Structure formats: structure tokens, C-alpha cells
Image (tube, rainbow over all chains, first blue to last red; front, side):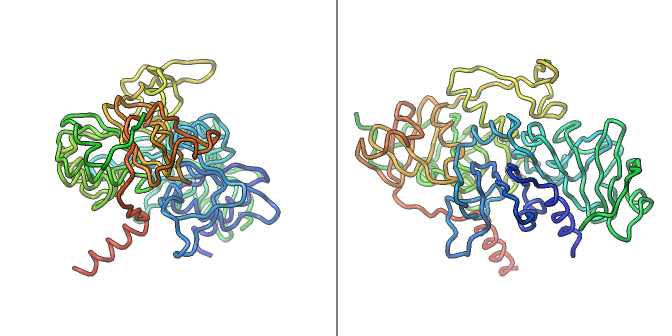
Length: 217
Length: 239
């Protein structure tokens, strides 16, 4: 199992029957493959669709039917289409049970940075700022460290923010961290990894939960 | 009443350099590709564009960018344009990035007679810098202003000569809101039907918002993820 797969599998366990969920582009989208049996989840795509189905065969790809990552998707029975302002009314209005996004940096205050690197990268925030401002629960799904081995979980973000105090949970291939008013609380570690190992790869100070457990994936 | 114009070129012939133009679409999905081609042929310059994205290098609004027609742009995501990124970093183009939901609502407000509104989005980020904030209840909000344009170029699936429009699947996106928020709204459609043929219960954009209707001469409709993959492969093959 790769680190990314572990992250996706673990977050999938948080899904509950009847949830409406928006998944960010990339790693978060992998979660759709691990929805537990017997649970009905409706995936939203912010370009205007509820009930997003899996990628179709190339021959069936419809240019009028894409997800927010601009990839072809399919329709599940009971899906619906709507315009952008309505899509974001449901996001901003608190109707999404969960939003899972990637991050470049997260910090001890639950601040998130994932949209720009000044002077280097011009991409834009897309719908990320709206999602973190409106979803009932915001989960950051990301690899624990940068490619160069630097920490992404910081005392304070250094990049321009996507949202301030918006993250509820941080899930990496090493652990589950809950953002609390008292700081970051380590609640789960991957098998073979200790709390000391996680702290060694994390700039922010982690409080270790008295109920620390092994990630159930 | 007949809003149908013979061709995309005729429909955009009176557009002016320096105008503010909204363009519908999300990525390359639901973009007015025939109207964009006509605007490129018209050759006007100094345009201020408002659109969620900027097409890609080689298609959609990317063609307007490459033709040097755009002076400034407002959108939420422009990650698929190498040329745009280079122009912005080089100070050649004035880019304003706006959260996607705020962008959609600012356009909706522009068409709905609402001059400004409060949202939680972007609070505590550079998006909120210089903007009025206000605490309502227990939460702080940012005041966002409505957007209006001289012209909206939009794309629908089917329409009639009265300007009633329906859209297809996720190609709806920003098109209906933009139709309401411009002084002149030009819609291109894939199919033109007789008044009464569209089910009145299914009409998404009522004709009151639409000034001109054009039947698109042809549709290429590339799928963006595949278009970019193909371009990369082509570039890889050359080097």
C-alpha cells in the first residue's frame, strides 16, 4: 500500500451514509475508490454536479461531463446538474458534510495554504477558499513532508493562506492529527511509526492523545 | 421578435476595444468557442476579461491571450496557461484571482441588482485585504462587490429565437449567471428550436437576459485533461 493509498483509505472510513462530500483534485479524489460497503455517499463537483460517477471508458467520455479537475466523469442514477452560483451556494451555505483538500502547508492554528507561491507559481485558488469557509468538516489530505523532506505541518504557515483557522483534521501517510483550540493533537499513527517519529518530521508541536492508536488501515 | 444573428462574426462585429467581457465556461467545458474565434478574428484589443479560467495554451481564451487582446483578467484558476503565468510574473497582464464561489456570486449579484454582499470566504487571507469586514452574529464576513460587464459571451446547448436557453450537463457552469450580468449578452447554441419547443419548465435562462443568439458553426469541444496530455506528448516528441 502506498502512502497516498493509506491516506485515501483512512479518510474513506470517516464517510457516513447520506454524506454529501466534495473532494479536491489529486489525492483526495482517490477516496472514491474506498467508500465502505453499505454506505451511500454523494460526491459533489463544484463545477456543477451532484452524484459524480467514476471515470468512463475513453470512448464514452463526454466533453460536457467533467469534474472540477477537468477530467471526464460519469453520471450516477439520481445525479443533478446546476450552475456555478448554485454550486457555491450549497458549499458556502454549509450543506457539504465534508471537504477533503490537499495542502502545501497547514499550521497549529488550523490555517491552510494551498493556492499560490508568490513570485513562482500563479494558479489561483479555484473553489478552495469557498470550500474551507463553508464545509461542516475540512480534512487536509497530504503527504507528511515536502519532496525535499521539509515539514508541511508548521507552527505558522509562511505561504499566503487559503483560510484562517479552517482545518479540522490533517491526515498523512504517517498519522491523523486533530486541530484543537489547544493545538495539534496526534490521535493515530501508522503501524511501525511512533509519536516520536512523527514529531521528528513535524515543525509544529504535537500533543499526543492519551487514546493514541494505530491507524486502522 | 427574432434575436438570431446569421453568424458569430456578425454577432460580435460591434464589440469595442477596451471593453469588459464575461466569458462562460469551466476550463474548456461550456465555452463559447465560436464567439471566441470570431472575437479573435475581429482583432479588438485592451480587453478586460472575466471568466473562471483562461482556456489553455492553444484553445479557448488561450487564443485571445496569444493574440495579445487581453489587458486584464479576473478569474479563479489559471493553472493551465504557461503563457499567462509568464505574462503575469513579467508584469504584462493584470490578473485578479477571486475565489470561485465569490466570483460566481459577484456575477449573479451584478445581474440581480445587488451592489454588494457579505461572505465568509477569504477572511484572513489576501483576498480580504482592503475590503470592509463586518461581524454579523458570531462570525466575521468580507464585503464583496457585484460584477458587471459590457458584453457576456455565453454558450448554451439549445435555444430559441426569443433567447430562451437550456444547457447540457456540466457545460452550464458560469453561463447562466453571466447571461444576466452584461449590457449585451450574446449566446451561442448548438441547436436552435422554434419557440414552444423547449419545455418552459426546463428553461434555465429566460430570453429576457439574452440579446443575440447564434448557432455555432462547428464544435471542437476538446476534453481539457486529454488536450493537455496530448500537447505535452507532442512537445515531448519534438525535443
